[in-house]
Length: 211
Image 1 (tube, rainbow, N blue to C red):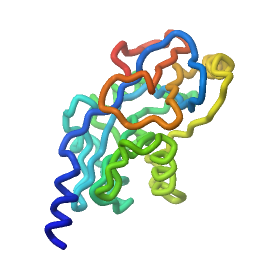
Image 2 (image 1 turned 180 degrees about the vertical axis):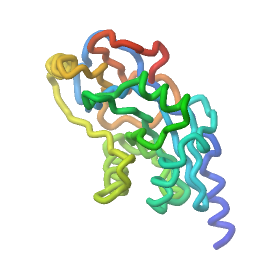
Image 3 (image 1 turned 45 degrees about the vertical axis):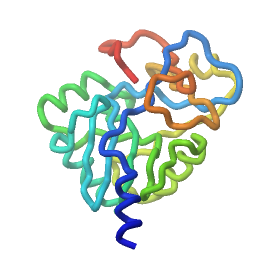
């Protein structure tokens, strides 16, 4: 049994590069789901033997910068798991505020930052990367459930064949844009056409290297 457990643990990578969305001008056709394009920083979390480590998308370790978020993930009592999401500051108007996020990180006052989770590439030693997107997200929604810490949010998604209308509504709500994800797609650590970035409008403080 110890040999099996060691083999499973070794299957969990020490580092994980996230999928990156491909910019596109027009909404895609076919079966897609849409999530808000958060104006934040991509953040991946690894949990092994009770230790939670958080990494920026380039692999830089941000664990010490985010004690509240680390404790929140630890409270879920996960093991041998990778989470994928976005670190976000919510502004006075209730929408993501990138300048406020930068200010919080620079000052070290990060307790109010929200961690929006949208994918689950590994869960309790199981490699879910080849499983369909909707299955990974369903498992993620279940593990967050009701009563999870306030700073952890499940990134809601909705399906529609009228993406142009969705983009228009998002722009009216001062949302930067949408991420379209192909139904049934795997988790790929690369920039791929299964994740598409759709911008509503130019926003103040917008970053050119966004996910």
